[in-house]
Length: 154
Image (cartoon, rainbow, N blue to C red; front, top):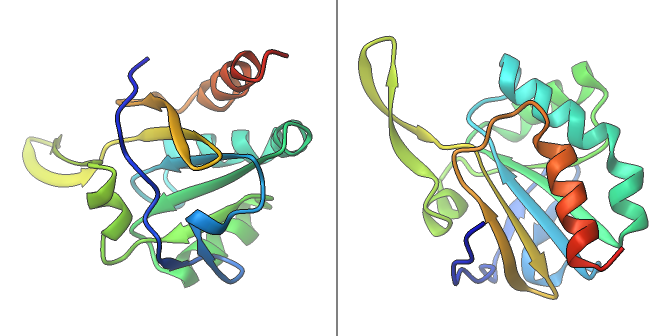
């Protein structure tokens, strides 16, 4: 577990359903998880897992947003195809990706490329309380839920 000092940017971002300013999210807790690309195996696993646990997160007064560089249209197709219940933020300009320092050099089939390193962040009333870097998709949503319960003393 690492705690970094990253604040939420005070600006609006397009989501699958509307626009959101992360500093104005109504719930006490906020989870942002960054993933490389819609409709890829690991990203699908992660999105489906967070969606499947959404009721548990809702019960803990927590909002979840998935973030990638995909377009809103790609997010909407992904959401529809996988019946996702969570909202996805389109970060085509990489504003959030740069802010959270999740763009890293990766090795794809022997070529070096810049891509999103799977990462997650838990905020409580706008303050970062837990950071996950180099996340493995399988089991991550469950781990975040358990950690959130612990942070809330439940």
